[in-house]
Structures are given as structure tokens and as C-alpha cells.
Length: 435
Image (tube, rainbow, N blue to C red; front, top):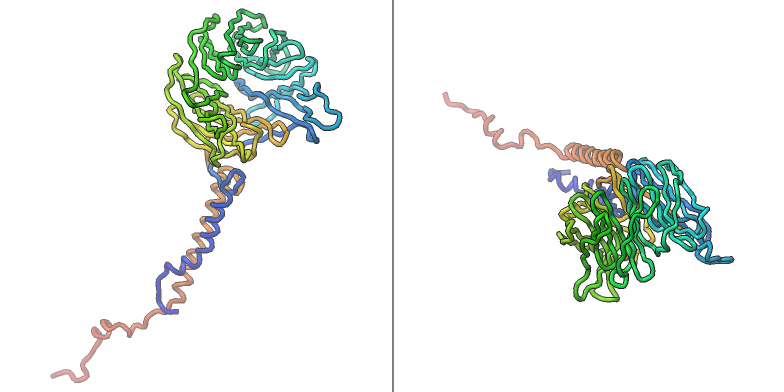
């Protein structure tokens, strides 16, 4: 082999390796792919009996100071032989998790006929659960060990939301033609009731409370109440030609956030939105989004705290789930497709560096925890193993390049020393030198 350039040799040797690596990037970088950039999965819990016509689901989630709680039902029936509407929603439960995924306790609610939970909220040292029963709506209180402290029958509200503070719990839902807002003390005694027409506001879809104010999100408006039950203001959603459907609500120390779906027509397609308001109801910003597969958005869930704004949403045609993080100025930090597809959108929560998703997957109740920041997922390995594996792969490529280069230089023949005209000119001696 005669002299030539090293570049073509290296390209010929490493070309197949580089080509295969690019194929891996193209084919295996989806939700279940081998090369990903998203928050790593920390732990997963999927539970509930798996039989034909059986459905298990998580309806709502909340955070305590050192744990994460879910509520829903198990062993619900969806048809089949012997179907009975009385068992359609199965057995209600509350399940409490430690940050590392350990189940601290599970409480099955079997003593309240027809009970179906629809909202859960945790205070500093207690958890409140609200749901509809056969004749009434029931409010329940649990301690941190899962022991029920009391249960109270309230007005028969339909659906609704609750929000707990250090000393009270607030409860809002539909009662006939009205949306009722109620305040209870820590012993379950009702302190006041306020109402507004649900013909104008629709059903309650979200509620947030703290030591100074109460916010309520309905299908059409955002409302603010004082803690004595006085309505301070209401902000309607929607503009001419747009159908706006608020679905989720959260709050941090700089404002309140609303997410939902919006469409320019009844037939869709629907896109998602997340908006931020100050504490006086003035919109600060709004951000629209669609699913990466461009199929639209069918439902959303939202969580906000000082670390960021986290949005979970589902895609209608592909049954995929997606999660995105924004900062308080609506700059997107990252987004990813969830490893498994939910039915609708996952409920979402974030605390202490962990992101929680909960919902229904393949008719099972499903909880998954992620790290709060995106990183490299390589062939299913989380950091730091993913970086070790990638570093090893690059090392193999580098070593291969080194030996290819050595082989190349060994095969290239060296020129003879006498072949240099300059060297011959310098060494020339006159055979007949003059005297």
C-alpha cells in the first residue's frame, strides 16, 4: 500500500460504528427507547387485581410533609357476566408512600356504603378525604399513621374539591343549581357556607387554600374568597371564538396557575394551555402547547411550587402521556414522553427533588416517581451508570481509532533515504578535485 491520507482509513473503519450509533439515536430515543434525556425513574408501584372487566384507578393525589398519598378504588367492574352497578366503582382506598417508594400504610374504606372518593388534601399532620356516599357526601379525617379520626356527613355535593390548611379544611362542589363553598374546623364542624350559581360557573375543578386566602377554579372562572366566606373577585375564562376548559389548578408564592384545554371549534383539535395569575386575578402570562405527536391534548394536570411549574397531559390518538416543566416566567426547562401510556393524563406532584405521576395504566392503579431534573438514560440505565456506559463506549471507539491509525502507519511504506535529491546534493563529492 502506497502513501495516502489517514482520514479515509479512519472513516472506513469507524464509519459502521458511527452509522449504527446514529441509527440507535433515531430509532430508540422515544419514551421506551434506549437513549433518552429525561428525569430518571426512581421507583414504580402498579397494583390492583388484574382480571377481565376489572378496573383499578387513582382519582386524586396529595403531598404531606414527608410522604405522598393517593386515593382511588380497586376491583371496580366495567361489565361482563353478573355485572352490578353497586360494584362499579369497587373498594375505595388511601395509600401513603415514603419518598423512596415504600408503602407506609393502605386504608380500605369498606364501612361507608356506596362511597366514592373524589378529592384528597393533606394538612401538616392530618389528611382529609371527601367523597360521595349513597345519600350524602362524606368528609373523613386521618392521622399520619392512617387511623381514621372521624367522618362527617355533609350536604350531598356532587363531585367537588377540598383544600386543607393547618387548622381548617375547605370544601366546594355542586348542590342542585348552586356551587357551595364550606369551611370546617379540625373537628369536622361547619363554620360557614357560601354559594354561587353553577349555571354561570359550572362544576368545581380545583381549590387552593393557605393561611390568608382561598382560590376556587370552576369550568368557567377563577374565584378568590376571604377566609370568612366573602367572595373578593371572579375572573372569567374564554374569548370570542375560543372554547376554554380549565381543568387543573395550583399555587406558589408568586401567583396561581391554571391549566386546561382550548379549541377554536367544537370539533377540535384541542390544545393545552397553562396560565399564571397574580393574587388579584390579573393574568401575568399564558403558554399554549400541543402534544409532540401533533394529535392534540385531551386532559391536563398541574403542580406548581418555587422549583417550577409541572404540567402533565395526554394525547388522544396515540394514548401517550407527556410531562413538561416551566419556570415562573413560562420558559420551558424540559419535556418528555412518559415511559407508559396513561388513561387520560397522569395526576402530578413535586416535592424535595422528586416528581410523582399517578393514574391508571392498563386498568391498574399506577404510581411512578422520577428525579426532579432531566439527565441521560442510556440503554435503560440511570445516572451515574448511564454516563459510565457511554464513556466506556466512547473509549472503545477511541481505542479502535488508535489501533486503526497504528495499523495504517505500519502498512504505509517509507521512502528510501537515497530518494531525497536534497540529501544527494549535499553528499556529492567531485571524483576529480582540482589541486
